[in-house]
Length: 315
Image 1: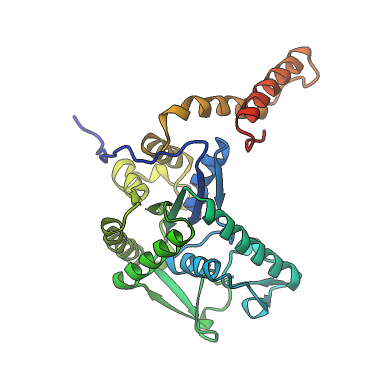
Image 2: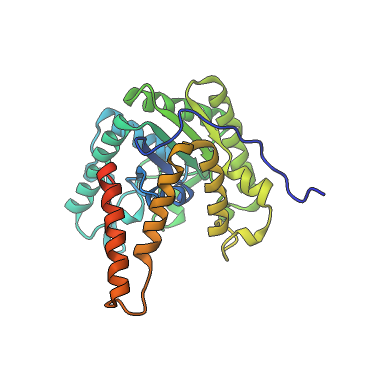
């Protein structure tokens, strides 16, 4: 008796290894996967401007990086006791205008450097719904809890999304013609838009994405959304908010990603890193005991051996 559907997944090339340089952009699910890469000490950079939910926000960042167009005073505003930008997540906010501009432009410079060296770029899109700031006539990445009357809400059409994805790929390849672009749809449910509206949004992204993937070289699709919808299919794989996948679901999707995208030859190194991470996180009953001191010494020697082999690793 079959109790679960299984998505057919094929090994992908060029596979990701410890020499790969990864850039992840997009929704909070992109950060979930980036956390896995960071845990296993891969070379990865994630969302320099913070979480970006929709394709236009990602495209705006890439355009600015491509044209070397710095952020200026017109890109920030003061509200609720701090300086903010409609183009960035609140984690870049500051009580100082010069500081937020420094943070924004540092993130922009970081994006440029990362994309020049990236072997793989992983893009995770959460929604096709966008908000346009009426006064500035610009699509925002984050509304920063400003009054709703200041924005117009609309959904990107399939054609608009196709054009956005095509331009995103074009810009990424201008930084590095050999880069592999991995597209994915976030399994996070944007229920604030509405149940029907969330599904409509995901459908628009899906229809547009597959057109781009089928016609452009070195673009791939990873079915993170489908894995949660069609393999897990149960609310027990969501957090209490019934919106975000829980850690079990994230681990499951990561394992699927690992099975097709990460070079099997580095799995043993990943296991070594995992053992070290667990060892350093261990809380002993007696930190000063001879046994624990010897344990830490052994861990340090193993960590130093890995760091000498992979100098970018730091434990």
